[in-house]
Length: 205
Image (cartoon, rainbow, N blue to C red; front, side, top):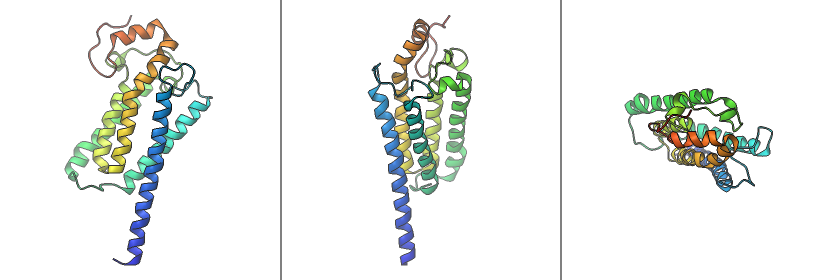
């Protein structure tokens, strides 16, 4: 192996690790700031108070940094670990990724972009929201599973795992805000509809 090839490998490794570090740090910052505001009415971060708030700007800046890094790593470190064959990759995991994130986009549109971005845009309880209070998160988790297995990289999988953990915890972070925003209507909805997925106990009136 000549010097140029060694230099190229070192540079590629440096790029991958640098992008991973920035992405994982952004995701950790979101998670820790969100955890600090859990049931703490004096500190709002997630959901942000409104679109003009510093919390909204910081959240989306950090999220975009994480997401851009995740996409970059998906190309830079694609199939780094020889685990799965191409039939599984393109026949199962890629479609699962597309279905998962496609569903999340659809459910976001049904919820309304204001609601999806932390604004008070009205309580939605119909359609998929009869069976889950958080179909966006459920569908995104399916997409993350497909993404991780399709790319097949430890770096990508670690970021996706932290992102998935955030989406599992997010409903707990959001519920106190939703109760303050919608009062008894949300409490009734909360008591009748599963947090993630299941059969409704009693339909909201």
